[in-house]
Image (tube, rainbow, N blue to C red; front, side):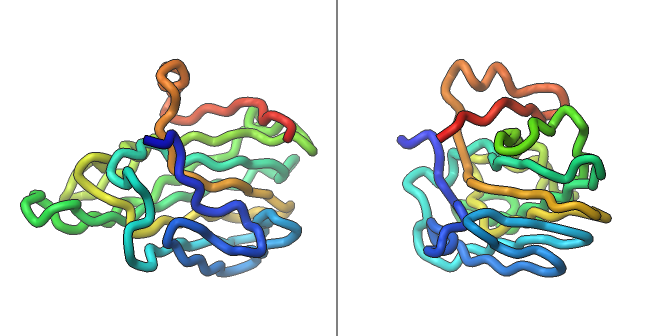
Length: 183
């Protein structure tokens, strides 16, 4: 089983793994990255078919983040999902939106970036409860910024199952950052 599923690296090929994307507001793909200003968002929707060999087991949404300093915008995430089987208690899952301010600790400074790792269990539905990676598959998600005056750059959006040692590093409200390795 692979440890990650790349959704979008913002190359000319567009999103991968059966997702389509559309942006609203001042969100633009430029030079292989997503740049977001103001109130903007990138929406992903599942375009049908099987998009991953282990679609119900990816536990984290992962992306790299840089820019935005010294303005600290609020970052916004949302998730939609459907049950894997008809026997599941809740056949549809539409999560609440998670919003959090981008803190100064998340900035490494160009050309480096921070990895943002968000456990999918942070997404909760008022009816269905917490997202269960083994009971649901993702049908769509949204990445956005709120009230941002300087560009936030995002790259390499993926779902992941961390290596055993990496799972222990996930903590502190479910968000961590780390130095991005140079290619």
